[in-house]
Image 1 (tube, helix red, strand yellow):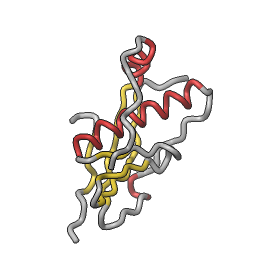
Image 2 (tube, rainbow, N blue to C red):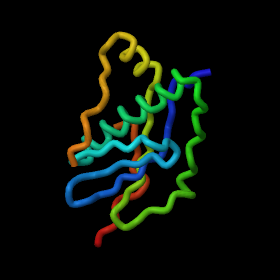
Image 3 (cartoon, rainbow, N blue to C red):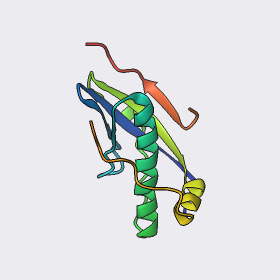
Image 4 (tube, rainbow, N blue to C red):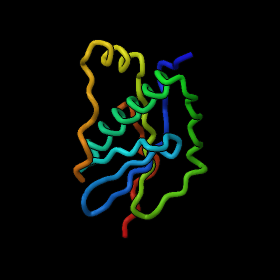
Length: 118
């Protein structure tokens, strides 16, 4: 059965050329962004597309990791990303949703801990 919403941890790595995003539980789901607003938007869209693909391929949806088990580096922040899959599926079916832009550098997320200063 397909869930209507999912919440997964994402690791935001701050580099000189932007923010790379990794979902430890979703191998291959690696969006990026130039700023935090774009990181939030791109992480939600990439995660929804990744989960949609798993659903449509009848592949197992992995359980999210506990945030207590995720180790961060000094330049990293943990973000909990939530997607509403019922809305996303409707947008896909109605042709309203497209893939996030390629890598160039609210209520649906929660920063678990801010980046550490150097």
